Image 1 (cartoon, rainbow, N blue to C red):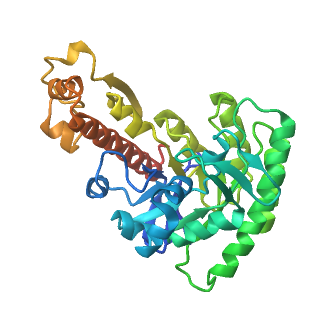
Image 2: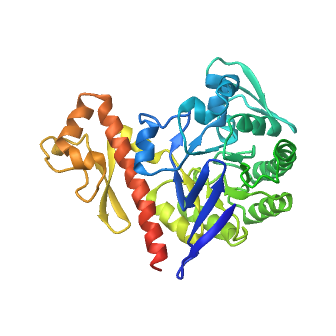
Image 3: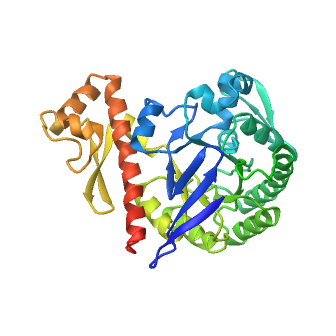
Length: 364
């Protein structure tokens, strides 16, 4: 289900191919965030036009709105939202543990939703059931997430519960899925352990014994610092089996993506390109694998006839000036947010494609 096609001669970077129910996707891969089943401000036709083959949708939010039962009436999340590519759904753990008034029990998590204040319960099995109802291509197990700052005892609890929940998720998944089907959905485990290498190693060892189709590194980029984050990544990647896809959750700054790919990471997701775009911050090339951010709200762009990025072939850069984008943001026209988000996602896609070309040439 995962085949490595190219290996770098100068780093641990690789190019792979994932076979999924909705088709094949090539890695390294960046996933645009479709929290509620849509990439904010853009159509899926535009996302496809850029070249993206896979998106990330949010189990927690979609379960609350519009609700799993409504999505089931459409037979799949793809049918409901009109996306014909592949979908990875998270487990909902990160969002739930970010809420207030969360109670953690051995068998489930209890929380109040942020919409109506109603009490909900989410178990490892329920999270998998929801994702199967969505007909996701890649499902994530429910994990225990600790926000920064944390104490080692909290991380020890997180690792223990994450392992127990991963085991239950795998059992439930196997009961529901025909493993003889070579185009079945994939189930990824999530490695926890904070900044503590012994706990990260224990978490990975436990997950390897359970056995998953891929392994995600969770709980990073929460405040521990970039150097410590990459220390953990470097430590773990060497221990994750080479034949398994590696997913670094929630990390999306371009220089960090490049560095992580060199260390052997395959899959990324982050809100950065669309969030920054909505705030008028637009990515522009400076030199190979280098970029700067243009704040289009700056007055100096009011009369600027140049495109956002003269080296970019996207629809926005080929048709609009910086002055026009500045005008759209100043007049609060939603088109400005859309164009900036489109360009940023295009920039991210081309950045990853450039890395792939460099891997094949032995330069990354």
